[in-house]
Image 1 (cartoon, rainbow, N blue to C red):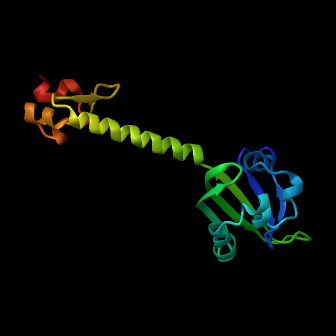
Image 2 (tube, rainbow, N blue to C red):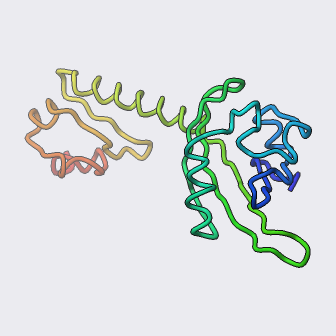
Amino acid sequence: MQTMDQPLLVLRYDLTVEEANSAFYRLFKVDTEETRGRLIYELGNGQWNIPELRRLLEEILPQQSVVEHYRLEHKFPEIGKRIMILNARRLPPEGDRPELILLVISDRTETEQARFELEGHVEFGEKLIDSTREALLVLDWDLKVVRANQPFYDAFQVSPDDTKGRLIYELGNRQ
């Protein structure tokens, strides 16, 4: 459990924390004394009292033994906005051990931010290409056409279907 790089919580059926791994403590900036034995919603001075988390733990998980890829966004006062993917599994009681819930948290904040920024750069590039008056081709590393602007299609009397994905030296009857 401590060797996992993703935050992990082990909850008792009453939703108190049985155990947490070091990745959880590190990411959410809490310590053992503030975590173990406490209701999950009380963690971090109530920062974990999140309606969508309640929905997952109190409504969805009791109906299913496993919930995967549950997306949750929350702004924590101490660490800021986090975009998390939660995977939860109920472990049935075994011997003297009561039923437990494993809650694995994958922090996707940086990935989502990078994707958002990349989409913005792509959109900017698309607008730049479309605003160019001269015929313009965008090629990949293999010299295949990724994109062309309308002046290119007009000047060479070709369609996007005849252009995109083709090698540059195949265009215009191999001219």
